[in-house]
Length: 104
Image (cartoon, rainbow, N blue to C red):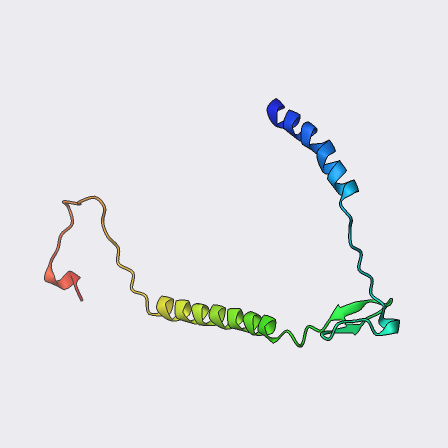
């Protein structure tokens, strides 16, 4: 555990220098000047929001997952409704009397 702590203590200042030296890009949304992208619209406090209704593949994926879960639940219900349970003895029993009247 002490080795990992030493390595992290050595790497931390290097990461801090990278954070200071690498320029960061800042994006701002200005709906007032109509600077939103094509798939976006203005939503409150001068922000651009993505139109979720135009992302049809996202909604299609959600519907596909719901459909698959419904089919799986239906198959499981159908199989369990007609299930036959058979008891299997794990140890032989010698004192059981078997005759043809016991099977009906």
